[in-house]
Amino acid sequence: MHYFDASILAPLIIKEEISQSVSEILEAMSNQKLMISDWTLVEFSSMLVREIRMRTHNAASAQVITS
Image: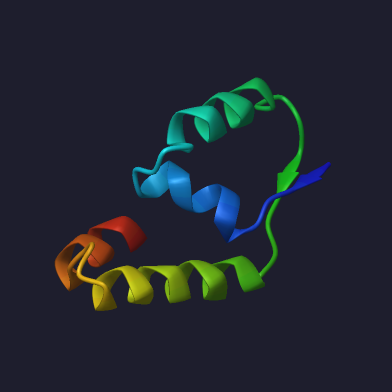
């Protein structure tokens, strides 16, 4: 079992320098049990709000990301 928090999951949704690497790692682990905690949603939401505040993303794109 492997645990991932928002810092690893965020690059799957929001393009970052490490997005491709994270995607490849998770793809290689696709046959294994992967887990996140309830706090991951809180961390991820906080990251999206920060992106909106910094004007990297707008509220509409955040809505699409969370749907």
